[in-house]
Image (cartoon, rainbow, N blue to C red; front, side, top):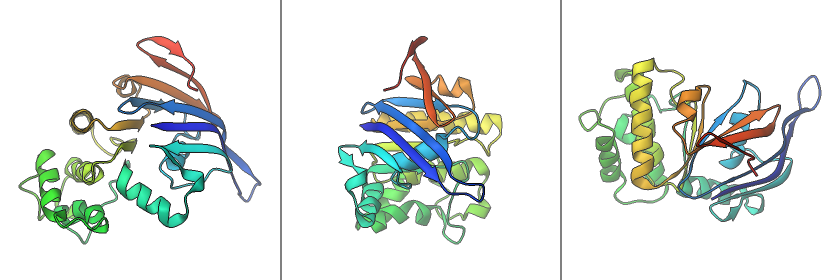
Length: 230
């Protein structure tokens, strides 16, 4: 489902070139859930951006759901993300001037779905917000906003879901509810999940965990057995 082969990413800065990713190789199977851990600055979020086609690597190969992202133009990448990838961030990234159903319907309308609003309503019902369709982000709690973001991420039936610290702005109890919902939706849809987190207990809910340090995959584990992510 996801294949990274010797991926490097070097960015320019005032202090000179910064090697953010330094030869990352990783394979993730269809329907697998993978937790990604590591210290701040280790390259976790950047790796997610590369997998989602939001950042082009300086070198290496990225294949997602059979698509070689290095061979896609910008318009093709945009369609790829729209049709195959859902993304949930720590910050909810909802459009403040749109209500809940409008926020969820956005990707469906862009895809030309005639049932965009009906599907968005069903998605919000699935996350327990069937009675909040017309509420704006400012009228929703943090947990409710993240549930809207989950509904939006799953709305188009993505093959891959990327979640970057999805509970980072939530209290412990609310975060637990959101994560339970995330894994429930993942199982229902059979979606491949890559979850970035600083919480080892959360990472252990995934099928396996990989660890990044200094822009490299250093190790991983599944069922308590150490494995090398290749």
